[in-house]
Image (tube, rainbow, N blue to C red; front, side, top):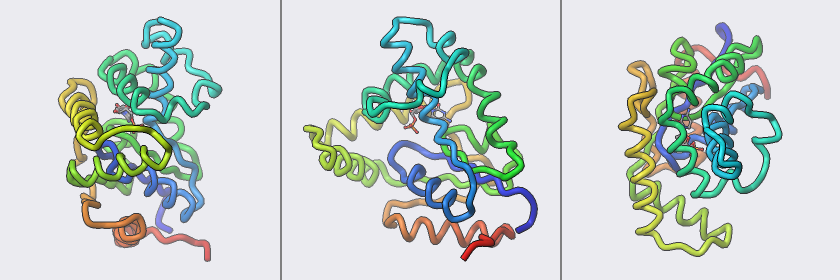
Length: 210
Ligand code: DC
């Protein structure tokens, strides 16, 4: 390996970044942070307690990151809404930066990892896919979990969230200029993993494991 490996993964919802981040973290033996979970926890807790999201973000506890309700689409929308608030983002920044600066290296995925959290990360991936492919995956996932929905609704909600995440003034969803663009529209998880590994190897990093 050449130096400390920090992998920054960004992209819109349902592009496959979470799956990819977990696989890369396991492959390289690195800790992984799903930064979206922080925003989900803030959105859900602020909504439940009727407290200002800025205060919730400042006092976020590990226990707030647990619970199946954080994975719902409602939580995703709540997260996207509190994520436009600069003070919320600032209050979550130190924790994320500290996670990224661990001696071991790290994998982080989200919307602003390569641009704001770790602008110096040696490996940046921007994972995307067509809106149709992403909505299809999300629809299949929801149906698999027994959620009763229709694809046009999934597509509309996803588009609304992506627009808010991309158009906000504070740390919008955008590819870092030095990010590797991975379009997974026609790829399964294995192909996306292989493409990411090939890019990471070109950057001089290989797993020391089996
Ligand atoms: O990745 P996710 O779907 O769990 O993210 C939920 C929301 O959180 C997303 O719509 C925008 C916000 N978010 C963000 O603004 N910055 C990040 N680094 C991660 C997520």
